Image 1 (tube, chains in turn orange, purple):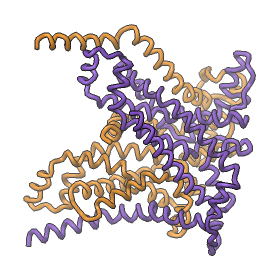
Image 2 (cartoon, helix red, strand yellow; image 1 turned 60 degrees about the vertical axis):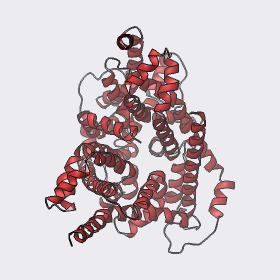
Image 3 (tube, one colour; image 1 turned 135 degrees about the horizontal axis):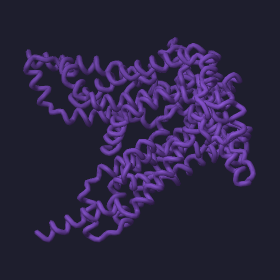
Image 4 (cartoon, chains in turn yellow, red; image 1 turned 90 degrees about the vertical axis):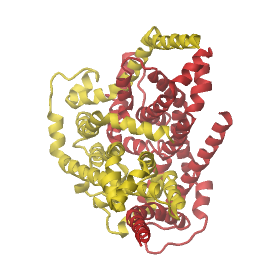
Length: 292
Length: 292
């Protein structure tokens, strides 16, 4: 018995030693290499956004700009409606995230707390939603959007983004199963209705999951080009993604320095969200992936 | 009396909570799917009121009379194989990250960064990198006295260039998913194998890999879906050019529907895509389980 403990101790020491020694340096070099591959394109774009067109042609892309020349940014702000796009994207994100988290918690609450006849079929429908590639149904969804009169309004993407999906319901289910049913029951004894239980107990308790899923949804909505591109062609309905897409073809903004400035402007919101909330993003991905 | 009341309340909650999500999923997922199937048997142009039933004509046309469709599927194949070849590398990197190298948290943040960036912005960044005149890659080649490469203009190269962009953007999410799986493994399991004298490779192959199998399966499934649905990278960067050389299946489907106004054919293409995704997923799952 004692010998066993002895061995265990030694191996733990070995494990810690292994990661700290020689191999460690190689590993760090490898990671620096990968970090460079990730960061260089971003860095080059940021550099380019501060350079003039002749500078782009004459000097190395890796050379930092000599001064913070905001001409390209000014030009982009002048010739495109960045603020309108920013407003549209914000509306889409807020509306989608709020409606989406309410709906998915409601579905998850029903599926974990109640038994009903069509429960299995209900799950199956969401499973179909996961298997069917979204891009595939877009062609037939298009006519529907025109028919219900939401084509070229902000409502069209919101209706599509707001629906709950299987991954969200799955993660909420995991969380809800950890809350003992006895909590619900004692609230019921005190005279709370199911609505009160959902709103006062369940919803507040799944806020950590909501943070994760909400952030991922927000980033998804903010970065999606396809749906706004298809359903909101009007110039006043451009989002950050479709605005940038338009910059590529617009001669006023298609030069590399200006395009880089536009790309940086569009990147900023998601990057801010990412660096502030990355803890939630990773914990959510871990919860979703590992338990499946 | 009391019991009845609770039951009524339960039904009321079920109906009110599930009403909107059900409407959304049936309206925007199930109905378009049914309509997609129905439209694939017609020659509808997307505008006229009459939808002529043409039987299997559209499917026959795709199968026997559309070399461009098969060419585009071949392009999708490049994305698929590219990402597939990267999966072992991603596994390896995730495994290294898990061994708690110093700064591994920072590397995790960097690795996942590209996934968070707006796809259109990513496209803009790489348009500059790949540009034939002032492009970063070509000036690097010139520095080493090598010939310029038409990254986006050479039909034989363009798909590999675009796959590179896709790898840059999506490898991070795979690494993070694998990492989440590794970190969920109980440490004593690995310690026990070290006591038994297993080499690192053996330890990885016999103990770690079987235990993260579900996550590998998810990544394989995501890869099929992603590679066959890839749309925004080629659409934004080359719009399918030069001369249709980088058209992917979805780019072609969307063009068939909205540019050439052949909704019936596009719907049939969408169904073909869906069937291919399902078949490859099943084959992959079978092969994977055979090996494991």
